[in-house]
Length: 461
Image (cartoon, rainbow, N blue to C red; front, side, top):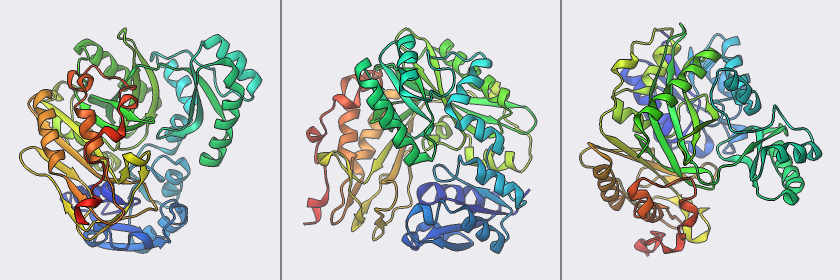
C-alpha cells in the first residue's frame, strides 16, 4: 500500500478524496494555485504545495509542477479526481515513469477510451449496442456529407477527444452540415488540440443513463446500478439520480452487464462510468466511457453503501476487489443537484463572488459535498460548481420531497453572487420530472426567468 497521496485537483472533489485518504490512514498532499491559497483542502492536508498561478493551464494542468510537488513531498500515489488531468494518458504514463501510482486506469486504456471513435469500435467489438455512426474519424466536410446521408438526420458531430458536453454540435439539415462541421473542427482544435471528428445519429428525446463500474487488476469487476442524468442544460448534467426512474429491471440488468463486459474487454482498472442513451422504445446505445470518478458518484454511494473513492485507492494499491455482484443490491433512491454560481436570468453566465452568507442544508439523509465556507470565495477562474446537494430516501417520491426541502434551506449570498438554486427547484417541480418520464429535452423547455428568486444578492442589500 502506498503511504502518501497527492491530490491533483481542487474544490469539492479534492476535499472529498482527502477525507477518504485520512480514513485509510494515508498522508495527504494538496496542491493549489495562487487563486486557491485559502481552499479548505489546504488546511485539511498534511502538506500543501503551490503549483502556479490561477489559470488552470499554469497550475492544475501543469504536469511538471504536479510531479515535482509529488517528488518534493514523497508522494507515492496521485489521485487525479475528475476533470483537469484525470483522463490525460500522458499524465498517467508520466506518473508511472516517476514510480508513482496513478489512481485510475492504465495510460493505454485511457488513451483508447478517451478517443471516442476508438471507443466506439472497441465497444462494438464487445457487442455493445451502438447508434448508427461513422467508422472512425471523418476527415473532411465532403466525406461528412456522405456519411451523414447514410446515417440519417439529425446527426451529431463530435470531437474524438471531446467530453463534458464540449466539442459537439447537432445538425438537423443537410445544408447546415459543412458549416457546422468546420465550426466543431475549429473548436475541437482549440479546446483539445485534436481536430478529429466523428458522426453519430442524434436522438433528440432520449434518456441519458450511465452505469458505474469497478474493476481490479486481476480481471474481476462489478457494476453498481444505474444513474439517470437526463436533466441537463446544454448537455451539462444538473440533476442525477439512482435508480433510473421507470427503467425496467431487466433492461437495467442488460445495461449493467453490457458495461461490465465492455470494461473487462479493455482491461479496465479502477472506477469508471459507461454512458448510454435509452430511446423511447427501450433500446439502449453506447455513448462513451469516463475513465475517472464521476461528479455524481455520491448517489451510488448512498444507495449501495460503498465508498467509491476508497475502492479506487485499494484497487490502485493492488488489492483484489472484495465486492461481489450478487451482494450489490441498491436500497432506496438518491438524488443529486449541482448548485452552481451562475445567473439563470442572464443566460446562466457564471456569477462568482465572496460568500458573505452561506447556509448549508442538513437533516436526515442529506449530504453536501462542497469546499465552500462563509467568508470564502467562488473563484471566476474555474468551473462555477458551488456545492453538490445529495439526498437519500426509501423511495423516489420521498427523495424528491427531501431534495425540495433541502434546496429550500440552501442559501448563498454576496456581492455579484448568484446561484441556480431556484432554477433547480423549477426543474424538480416540472410534471415530467415528478413522474420520472423526462428525457434530455426537459430543461430546454423550462423558462429560467420563471424560476423563483433567481439570484440571492438582494438579500444582503
